[in-house]
Length: 398
Image: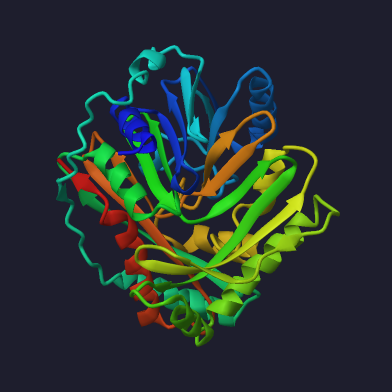
């Protein structure tokens, strides 16, 4: 068992309130307890909210942030009652593990003593009963997809991301082993955990909204997905070429480039189109970066979230359609989650996610697909089930 795995296991036993894990770089950022929360409950107060967050960050090492998919809608549905449209949390203690180094900031929870001995006994028995996955026919969602296609054929909309949620009861949710299972299955994703009151929002996302460090803003276009059936990369690429997914991806990558031009005159660097292979689904991916002088993370979020990969295109028209037609409030699903430091900021799209409520003993999971005019409903059902499977197969009961 590596030091990274030992520390991660110990962190989860200590019940963090915030957690970001990037397995590819062996990076962990964990917050314990809550010292202060700055909340946005009404979008009309967004300017004051930003000012308060920036003021607090001037005297703090790190703040953990989350923003709803559509923060300018004043949502307070029962589903999201424990969360705010946007919030920044400053925890009692912060633990960071990267480059094989462990550091602890504002140690108000006696963490140094707790983590001082990596070799302490760790319960690593991960044999647990999995929560049964119910394969859904998604009848309502299929009808919504057909409605979206009609809208695309009769309006300016070129793409709509149509989402669905499903609820399942769970008796003894095992958070620690669920998170460990997600990290093991999806090592090239970012795993996150946000606790608030009676709810825990968690997942493993393949999509970075942005990472800003050393005056470079890195982002990516991830759009266009097909189920992973174990094929080799070249065969997967051929499958993509025979679909509308290349065009769907192009919409997203071109949108991101245009948005970046609004804040930088520097050359935008873009990678060749790649395939991001996950455990049960493949995505088309383009990596994009540009040099930017200041860590204006609120501006980065405003420009890059939600992108056409999360909402559709044009973005504002797609958001309106989603608001008027989906039968649930997205809240944090497809929202942004991350953390900010003095010179660095990192935010990720809250995808492949679920929320557990310990009062209702209920898991709510979320998934969605990008729909264009030529989308085939049966194919979209397969993709949607792959996305639900990505989160649900890792949900573990004691």
